[in-house]
Amino acid sequence: MNSALAALIGLCVSIVLIIKKISPVYSLILGAVVGGLFAGWGLEQTVVEMVSGVKDITPAIVRILAAGVLTGMLVKTGSAETIARSIIKALGEKYIYLALALSAMLLTAMGVFIDVAVITIAPIAIITGNNLKLSKMKLLLAMIGGGKCGNILSPNPNTIIAAENFNAPLSSVMAAGVIPALIGLAVTVFVIVPLMPKGEVMSGTCDDHQNEKLPTLWQSIIGPIVTIVLLALRPIAGVVIDPMIALPIGGLVGIVVTMNWRNAGQCLAYGLEKMSGIAILLVGTGTIAGIIKASAIKDVLVGVLSGWSNGGTLMASISGALMSAATASTTAGATIASASFAESIVAAGVAAVWGAAMVNAGATVLDHLPHGSFFHATGGSMGMGVKERLKLIPYESLVGLVLTIVSMVVYMIFG
Image (cartoon, rainbow, N blue to C red; front, side, top):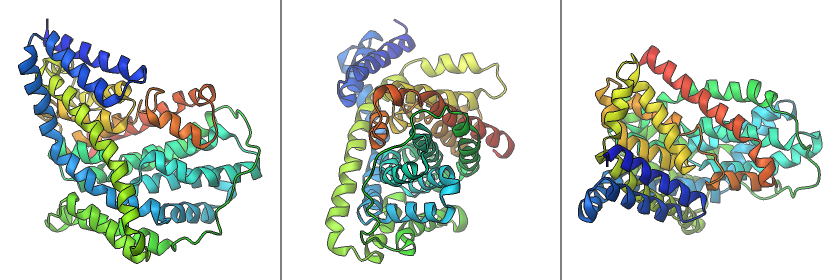
């Protein structure tokens, strides 16, 4: 059987198993085995290609584990909540959708997982929504849209893995997402949220933890600022500080500045727990990526897109979108797409930084489908049932599509 078709069969097996609520890691590994066997490689060669795929992303896995220090600091010290409250208070209730979207964007841009960012902001959104009788779906859409915008310019696992697979500086890939993120934020707040039907109006109560002792805004942002400055030294001054060093340093500085050194163990444990789940998932995605990379899929795509003047651009964006749909995960989608197609995208003439950025943006288009955890975590944060949460999918996809298209346009202008 043609290896491209075999790899697609293996990927489809993984998708079906994930939809059936089988562990995504084991689903991806089993799909990789099926793909290799259908390609006629035999068990031994199949395992070799699977292990090769995992080896390719091992450096990124180590960096992702290191990023847990910053994530743990932001969440467990209360810094993420302080940042969100400060933005919402500054913009006021009149601009609540902008405040929620901007809060989610900045939190994810600083390194908080998008689902954690939404869960952190949701209680504030519920309180405000109750007071102003606002639409529950519009409130959640604003937070998700802002989070997607922040996710393409953050030191989160999806950006780290895309930069690693394209052998591009993380800081440069983050910078490439700035313009798409800002335009995406504006379109989310002023176009997509107003387009959505009002739906159920907020009612009920929510506990307000405003009296809890939280760090100041300055204390909250100093850790992420240190990380960004350290990462920016490479393109600015030619001083290379690896994310494996920059991310933990920012987290540790934040722990000290917020005077949470006594809770440092708790911060580190939380960050490690969050990143360990991602790291294990990446092992599974590495196996299927190894099969896809060894197959003829990339040759088929190159052949289909060779007649297009921007074939490499389309390959980067489409592969990110398709793989995010398959896995319902930004990280897994960006991993499989970048690990499988990076060489072909660069060979088509796309600069590594922009290839990584477009794959990353493409991975936001369909990462919210129901067979992933993000769908359920964000819906649960606002007390939504599955039926109500499903209504958001077209609008979330539109946000991701805007980010992808703008990323492509920016590359064509500046790349």
